[in-house]
Image 1: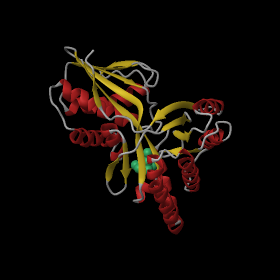
Image 2: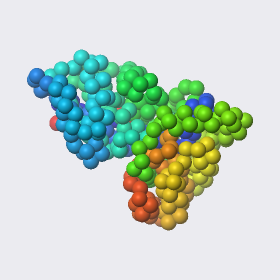
Image 3: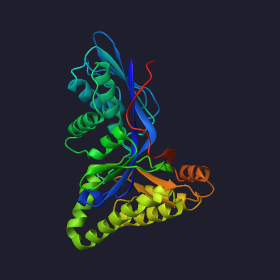
Length: 318
Ligand code: MEV
């Protein structure tokens, strides 16, 4: 059996503004998806049996799908198996990343699958090859919509500065609490909504996106110095600007304000496309406990996540 795992991601600062060329800052997180491949004569079977993907099993050759979660994960695995012309295998997916939450679960699954399937066939790809192939496959499955950020973070790990090009940043880990609203996010529709509003208020949006880009730039030395108080202030400012461009929601705001209030967060903001999905908060002096409780009380699902996590890796043979 060959197993590879890859991390999910969060956007710390700069979402949406990056689509118009401003800088964004993303980090790989220590919540991972893993893909195991083993020989199984006469079939191609994909199984996933953890909480996040809600157990399913199907036979790709018979085409029987047991649930929407099955369809979600297997579209990516099928694309990888086709690419490597892989047959007579059983593929098992495990993930601690919620699907459709904006935490890069599909990119983590594709990247882990590319490494697991290629290694199982005795072929050793470079990280650059894994990132490029995974991006192409994720984009293909998502009908042309995928940013290279998610697959790059799942492959290389650490932090990435995203602007006209993507480059790594050497920064220490940052411990955050993530709150999932339970409302699936839709990156395509949120990006289209923002771009449409931008057309009507071009001058205002130019200023807002420039301010968001400056926030991303300012955040880099603060993360280097582990200056939680000022990182938190920047999160609050960035959140206000994301509200201004229309990507917040009642559910997201309830989690953000619960974190800043009872949770004692130093700062909190939407992460990713918005509209649903997740928010992030930086713990205050009382730590993560009150934040987790505040998110649960506001009907969200809390996770602790550390940024700067390791990229794709082969796991020990079982
Ligand atoms: C989504 O995680 C971040 C957006 O900026 C879209 C993108 O950069 O592709 C909203």
